[in-house]
Length: 249
Image (cartoon, rainbow, N blue to C red; front, side, top):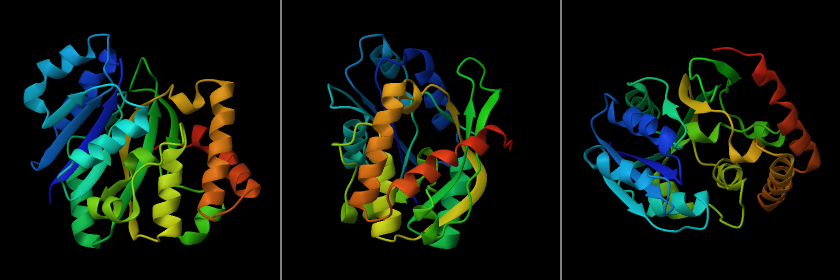
């Protein structure tokens, strides 16, 4: 099975090399790696060109935000499975993609997800927060549960049939997409109980009070649009994050 991995980047020369090498060093040998650059001005484009032999496809042009960029990547992807690796992030091991593809083969499901480790921006060996997931059940969505989106791998046919990211959302399009796929369309999924991604802290959704409030508003709209829940679900979703600061792999 070919797996397409998409990285959207804008002015992140300092960390993009780690993401590129994380994909390039995987033991699985049928990976299509796609980078969508938002017309960076900090030397990111030079870094992409320098690593062209490690990248299957790349484009650099102005976009309308990260979800627009990811949608461009989905359109370019030719793999049976699609996953995303943000430019600040890296895979937990060099064999994790092999593990994910094996899980698809064994389960026959439409999607796979796992655990996520938030690490220090300056020291990736320091765990700040650990998102321990669990086996999926429909009722969990109304309780504010969701898989960690960076660990969510989905067959391309699902995007073809049920759509890509809704770019009217600026921060919560990933949540909306998972509610649409898992809740509204009820695609099949399974949990791989392994850390898939190491994510550096400091993402857009949590880097200011304004963004936290905007994300909460967008999360609520996503819940209502997908007929999953309301305010109670949103409160439970936010409360559930607290325990992640006390869990370790």
